[in-house]
Image 1 (spheres, rainbow, N blue to C red):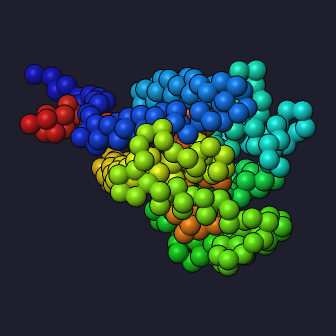
Image 2: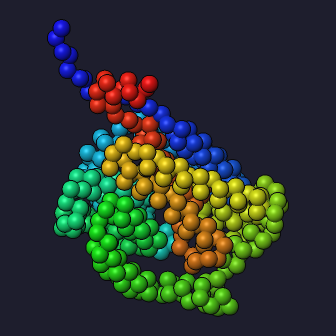
Image 3: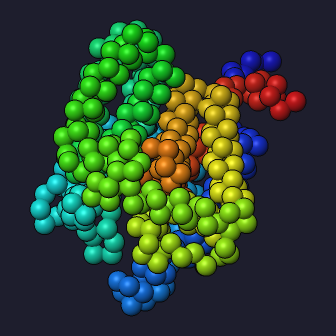
Length: 386
């Protein structure tokens, strides 16, 4: 009887982490819709004479983000990585457009948005995902030469440095720092030599420290944080109001919709400080529930990375998990006064279409990594199934 050669086949297997991640994401998204509904009503009434203005926008963005989640969960992440060079170039182009007067929109002294007819888009939110995939793909291709730093630095860091330079030009220091924290995590996870990471890290810290003290308002935030009694231009005002909101909520909160701080007492109550409104309305129990969900998200993301069957999937999973977790840590740390005000939103929960859609793109890719499994032959298929 003629021997039949083994056929290579691809089978999809959904792991338990897939369902955990989906449930956690759904819960965080629902919390976001509920809290934006509560926190944004005063702003809608004040600016548009319509209490439901921001609520309708948030629901529309939530629907779009859910569609995006399902689309990216069905696209093989290897295919996305193959076009990462193109994606990073497009991202850099969009960041450059933001800085052009007439195209980029300036709000509060920062030029971070491109005003489209139907909505404002913040390219830097999507650049975070693009850099994770791009660098993961570079490390995956060069992993045999991982100890040769030049094979990683060029051309990868040319594009990455260009992107982060444009982000700093907006200016958006917190996003730039977040991106580089993730870059260091990916390099460490990817096996880059510690001495190389250390060298890049020292250079980066020196540059960041200089940039941090370049602008007066950033220096004031640092000094005000170090001196809690400081009256410097009211730099401590937001933190003080945030702590009042959290303290007012006590254990069980004042009840949904009953926050007082959202009525112009706490600036950015529906974006940067929405965690404080959760604490005010739902108390310590509400904040602990949200923190627990993010811890579970991080744990599930790490599990997906560890179970990934290839180097590329492991790196992308670590990058996306780190992105969501780091942003959550920074936002919550600001709300409780542990670090200076940064302007970082809370993933899934803060109002903002670009932030929500980009985060859901990341989760969709993470879901795809959790369910993608390759069996190389018919024999392996039966061994794995039985």
